[in-house]
Amino acid sequence: MARINSNVASMVAQFNLARSNDNLQVRLERLATGLQINRGGDDPAGLIISERIGTDIAGVNQAIKNGDRATSVIATTEASLTEVNDLLNSIKGLIVEAANTGANSKEERDANQLQIDSAIRSITRISNTATFGGLHLLDGSLDYVTSGVSSTAISKAQIFGASFIGTTQLQVEVDVLTSAQKGALYMHPNQGPIASSTFSSTVTLQVTGSRGVQEFDFTSGSTIADVIAAINSRTSLTGVTAEYVNGNATSGVVFKSELYGTNSFVSVQRVNNDTSSQPDPTLQAINSNAPVPGTFVFGSGTIASTRDIGKDVQALVNGSLANGQGLTISTNSPVLSSQILLNETFATDPTITSTTFDIIGGGSMYQLGPEVNALQQENVGVQSVAASKLGGVLKNGSLQFLSSLQKGGLNDIETSLQRNDFSTASDILDEAIDEITIVRGRLGAFEKNVLDPTKRSLQAAVENLSASRSVIRDADFAAETSALTRAQILQSAGTSVLSLANQQAQTVLQLLG
Image (cartoon, rainbow, N blue to C red; front, side):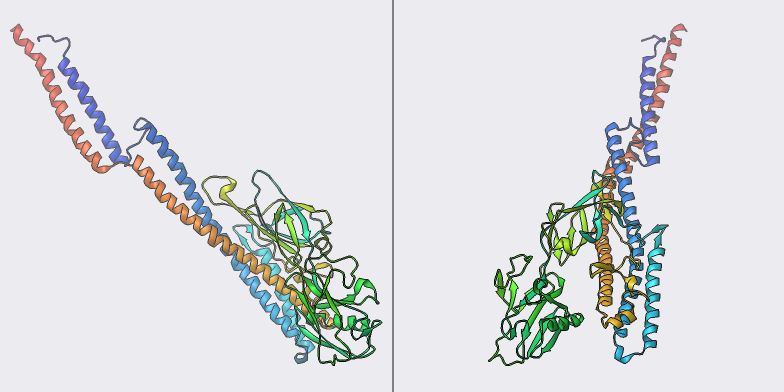
């Protein structure tokens, strides 16, 4: 071999030296970056999956931050609600004290009224000023917006959660299946000691309702009208009202629980009278499975009884059976969580056509997952806690709110005192306290059962995704340093071999000697 135009040995040495050089550069780059995939050419499939996992990690990390932010919002909201709760409890104490008229003066009651007014204004002030980063929390900004609510069918609709999957609004249909009823006992006008709607002997009736028990004495000659007047004068003490059967003075008297539902009842018994000559008055109740008739007839679908319990309304909401309590129905599902107070006429007449209304927006939506879709979002509504919106209680066919306890309102101390009835004010306060407590409970449940578990799940997902991405993309320093040493040796050896290959061609000069 004495050819010099083509030094094949040198070419082979150059080629292998270049490969060693490239390999050395790769090892240096991986050790410098800590990654075994720095460009698509390093591992195309590995780059694709690692980038996808990186996107997942970024989404999950942001979801964790969203959950932390939601927790902060809820903590701020609940702190304000706690103050409202304390103020309501203080008002409750002031009302109870004011009702103790035998032991406090007018000046003391006036001072109590001033404190009540101040507390109510503070509640409204908290409603208007509770904010988080410019987001108003308790003024109704986070409440759901409804449209088309019929006042003849629905007295109050509270929406706690609604899902707008695939739509911008949610229609709600309410259809009453079984009417709400009051506990009712019917006393026959011409049975026992009653003759021609007049008592023929002295009768003492013990009347018991959800508020308490009272005894009423009726002397011989007392009329049904006297019974009705006496019972209604103490409704605030018993929770029982009285009226003519079928609106007719000669048809007898019906004793009714003040409220609807299974939590209300009425009991009427004769006590402390000699019944040997005059039997007890005839008391009847409607059979528990029978609806209330338009015209009551003694002995028709009735049973002898001295106690009767009311019935809760039963209704369908969007085709699903709702939970009924008195005139109120409630639902709790991923699509709709609500509490709806039905109008008395609508709730007691199943023949009335169903009513519908729309939830057209509102609420607060929390993005709790890495993917922006409805399945990874939660909707929560927080209604206004202003005094004009809090504690709505149905009285005489109209809603009365906490603001009615202020001076000059329908249920302030002086007005309640004139009526000798603080029960309405107490009911409004109890309802307001329940509403605040329910909101706090729902927010607490959302934090404990949704936010906290979701956060823990997402943190575990970050750990697992990061570990998976590390296996695919991160450099193994032990392996890379070994490969670096090999590349360095090969580069050194290749350089030496190339030098020898170039020197071999010079032996031709000896032939020209």
